[in-house]
Image (cartoon, rainbow, N blue to C red; front, side):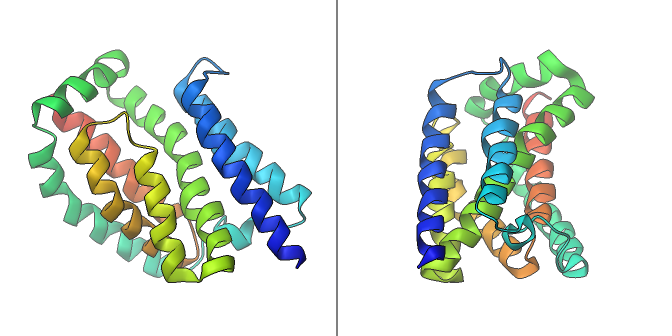
Length: 198
């Protein structure tokens, strides 16, 4: 019973975090807000609830499988992203990000933004939902929320998130770590921005 009410607290926090992050800019930078809402506060919440972050993917997990899936995922996505990122909606959305930051600034921005997102969706949400509904449903449910969190981005990207988010969730579930989806997501984001601004 204790685990159920703790899971409920985590899921309520997840909903509140998504709403607060959407409507507010507490720290003045998108990536810092992401670190706050999706990494720092969830880690503190887990500690308050006396739950180990390692149970929520904050570990290396099956690193051999993780590295293989990361390399395979990046190789599989590169040609698709090369085509999609040339679309005008992607170019208009992503070119200003590159122009404002350059290569290293864009990579740092993406890493700061995505480390929290991945811990939140492929760590905290995935493993909390798995406690309630099992791994398969957890992979789907977190991907649905991940898709809705993309509503301000280009439509094709948002629609693809139900598949991409499920794939990221599967990688996290297979490796018991959010780090490998993070590396894939970092590649996808950086590569998309780079191609869009060419």
